[in-house]
Image (cartoon, rainbow, N blue to C red; front, side, top):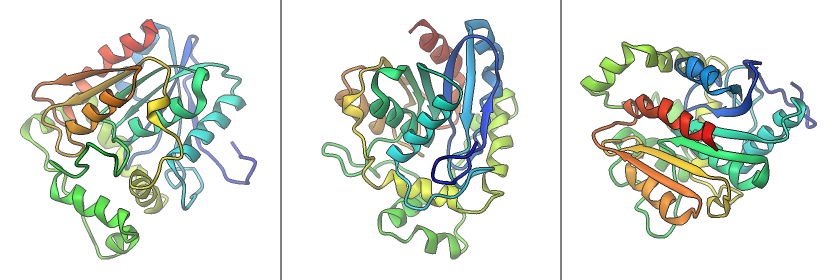
Length: 267
């Protein structure tokens, strides 16, 4: 779809009957809705809608974008599809954009569910980098310093520190995460670069104002986005419920996504 400012968004819609859920993809992925949850969504009466964030897949780059500006893109997609009210869900950095949408669009959002979301940068009471893998600290600290593109051009390669449990999970249905990761950068590096920058800049909206019921799922062994981020969000978002899953990593937390989707459907 073409936006009023001339940009293009690549939008996905399963078109199935039911209450719409707008999916927010991780970094760096394309925005295809989560195939491992298609059967559960159909059983629960949910319709998946999603889009590539600017700079990913078929969506135009938008330098300087923020969590709030992506929420406005979500609003444009919902308006184009005549979705008056909808739920939001997101994985990893996508969870942050889901929360931003819930904060900015208020009553249009019926509920929010996140898997390993990132808390706002620089907030009081959170050591934002504590517990992150070295690659994560390097990427996000360079973004905060205005040097993320320079880091990319240096040949930097991210090391997620996959565990044996992660590798085992990738051998099952959630190997789908690998299928959407590669194409995420086919349009160039700016989707990932601009995501990282947006995580370290003011959101332009406040998650503490979210009124929709919100479920925060996070693993206690997450070293990409440490569980302290979820604990901060839960402590400062009055509508939030936190579920910390013992032993789950940043990747194996998706094994709890179907239960989270059931929670979402009940709202």
